[in-house]
Amino acid sequence: MKLSLCVDSPEDSSGEGDCTIFDFSGIEKILEGELEKFYPDSTKFENVEISISFVKPDYIRELNRNYRNVDEATDVLSFPMIEDEAVEIPELPVLSLGDIIICPEEVKRLHSEMNFDEAICLMIAHSFLHLLGFDHDTEEKQIAMWKSQDEIKEKLMTCCRRNK
Image 1 (cartoon, helix red, strand yellow):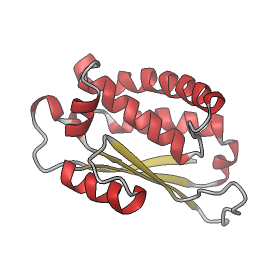
Image 2 (cartoon, rainbow, N blue to C red):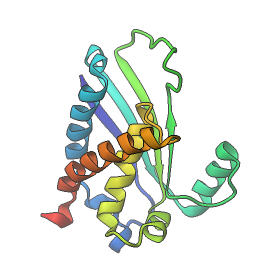
Image 3 (cartoon, helix red, strand yellow):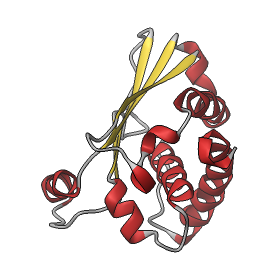
């Protein structure tokens, strides 16, 4: 099984909001390992795909309004392809886990207590877990998800070229 990230960056990637400083091939390898840990059946697929898009505040606000009925920009949205555990996954060579939509400007605004690189890694880890069916709608689920996302975030931080 090979995990592939399809990454779409914003037009004006520069300075502190520059998401091109990440080694996305390294992120793929880390998430591939995490996927095998949380979803061992993923090895039945030749390829697993996740789309990551970095967007502007107006676009993520539109998505948030249309899909969550929340008329404001947010830092990250996850759109899992498989949302129900009872859904049978078709026997295909490629499994699409879903889409991660990140707004770097909102990440900076909403997570000013951490550096930008760490916050982006947190967004990827958080959304990745949502794509795998994790949720934080109860205290017990939140504790488990936060623990996993912090572990994944720390691993992802090694893929930021500013840290090297």
